[in-house]
Structure formats: structure tokens, C-alpha cells
Image (cartoon, rainbow, N blue to C red; front, top):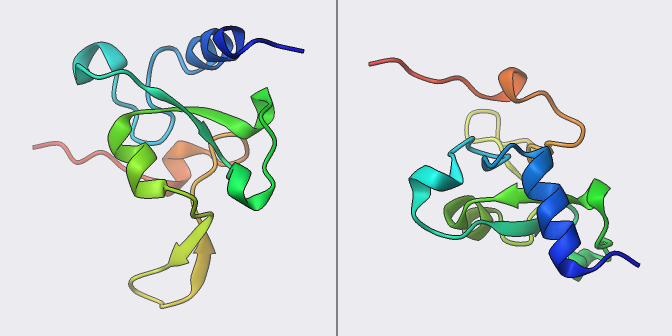
Length: 97
């Protein structure tokens, strides 16, 4: 069995120290990042590397235990971004000012 500290180390290392949802670097955030279950444990998600993401506090709180949401334009229920299966660039863009 993998210890909690080992899971934290491996997930943070895999994420290169960035939130896997918004891509903020932990060093720039000023707060400790969290292990986030992609399929929440409240929905029978397991605590293993494939189901964990490195998340800043803001993304962690916004996602909570949700796995889908209504698209604001189409009003269709769509799955939330999953960094284990989805490509970030297919879902998001960065606005340059």
C-alpha cells in the first residue's frame, strides 16, 4: 500500500508542481495544493494515482464532488475536464492581454 505522503509526492511530481486544472504553479499560489479525486470518493472513487490530480485550492473548491455540469451555452450536461483522459488545450485557452 502506498502511503499518503508518497501519493502526494508522486501526484505533485507528475503535475510538475502545477494545478492540473488551471495550470497555476504552486510556487506562485502561496497556498498548499491538494490531492483531488477526479471521481470523488463520495461517488466511490478510489484513492489511486489514476484517480488523483494536483489541484490548487480554488479549483479544488470549485470542482467539489462534481463530475459534470451544464454547458452555459447549450444547457447540455457535459463531463468536467479530467486531466487523466482529456487534453487541456482542447478544453481551454489562455487569453493574452
